Image (cartoon, rainbow, N blue to C red; front, side, top):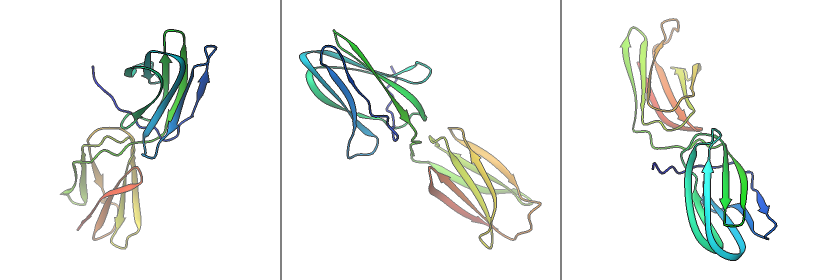
Length: 187
């Protein structure tokens, strides 16, 4: 089974208390993208934690034996969206939901800009795991002349035709999750 680790930034912290006086909640920790699942019960037993995405696909199943525990989960590298956390013991099942609004930044292996022909440039990004990549193109006076939002995961290559722009040099700036990862000047 493929093990998936999740990233959560905006988290609808939920607390569930059932008739057996069990309680379940999700708490933030000091580390970004790491959250504690806090479980409290009157008797010890097997507890199953199942996390599913919006489509109902299981992304993580964990089993813990205990009465009272705080279990850390590192939510780092799944797409943004809503997730469900289902906590079951032999007496009940509690459901919490959370909203993953964080596009994690995995290391980009390579960003390349190369001239193809007369004012046409190819931008290639390899190793993209983020959903949002922004390509800004500036002229030699550092004026923004073009912006391109690439909203798909995975490596990509795109050709930019700058023939209609009169400039003697360009700077290509590639940004992932509001962080500039490459700035390449070409003549």
